[in-house]
Image (tube, rainbow, N blue to C red; front, side, top):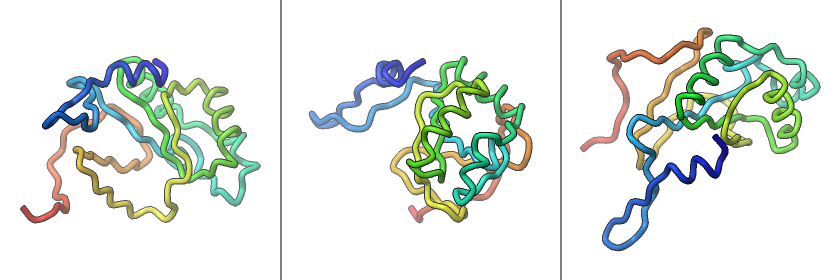
Length: 144
């Protein structure tokens, strides 16, 4: 599925006569996936020469390509800079990752707290890429 195919599966949402953010079909997830330390060796931006030879995490490749084939949207969201785009795209292609898009320049440093008007679910990578499972946890939210 290409980026234009993703656009086709989004359907317009109109509220009070105005178009608002599109909605994915029921059951389709929009995955934002980090690269370094999540799908391959953790390579800092200060060592870009290592990006071309980073070792892939095989379970990440299998799981992400499965999600792609199931019709989910795969977007890599990385702290690598635009200067690293070509080497990153070549590495992803070399290893056979299927994806729709890539966003460069994610803020560095971790401890992310994403605030959005859409439902956001976050999963911390801890060394094993598998299908996701349901688990009850405590999260921080805004007061009602």
